[in-house]
Length: 196
Image (cartoon, rainbow, N blue to C red; front, top):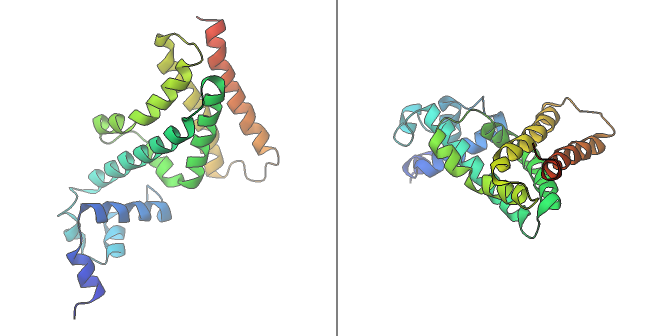
């Protein structure tokens, strides 16, 4: 009779390795991921992992891509039935919710891409959802990408501070977040009435 560890090693494939790596990231943090830690979780040797991933950077890149695709599915669902300023507010709240639910995967998608081409392909749904909302405010096409990036930058500042614990104990935190959202959305809408 084979042991559970032997059976697990026999079933090892790239998907299993990557899914387990995501669990390690969720538990220990994106920066803490190592082949040694992953091998321990899989009850296998580090050398066995290299049959399925090239190296740690390859694994981190795959985690970034999968996290970005997951974020894309979240924002696409949230965006349905919304448009304009209301839609932008919904996306702002969804981004924060994603970061709260998957703080380490959010950390992964906000790092410099390890596979640039793959990363921006994976970001398609996020970019599309943001683009649709910004476009529906009436902004000219050439302002859509800069405005979307500005909105994300403002939100990321808040989300990063919240994730780090900087805001712990702040009683008016929801009010602060709403002010950040109002500022980002208002700036986008003002671009329509007061173009550069």
